[in-house]
Image 1 (cartoon, rainbow, N blue to C red):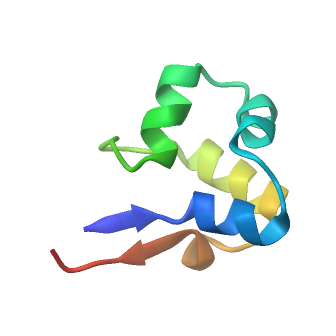
Image 2: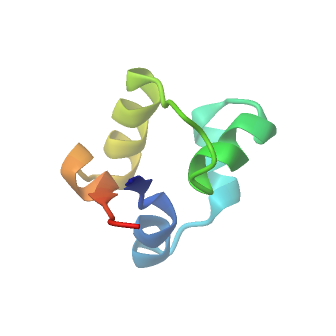
Length: 67
């Protein structure tokens, strides 16, 4: 399973989920599903924006877990 690590990265940067939500400009329902790993897809545009905001790469943003 591929897991989005955005909450870990926000914590390391001292930022909040609310801050990221406002920066992305997406609906709260979709944002919440995304950061809580409850979505099946994420738009490239959102991945790029998150990486730019958190000064990270897609490799930092995702991890593969075995369940």
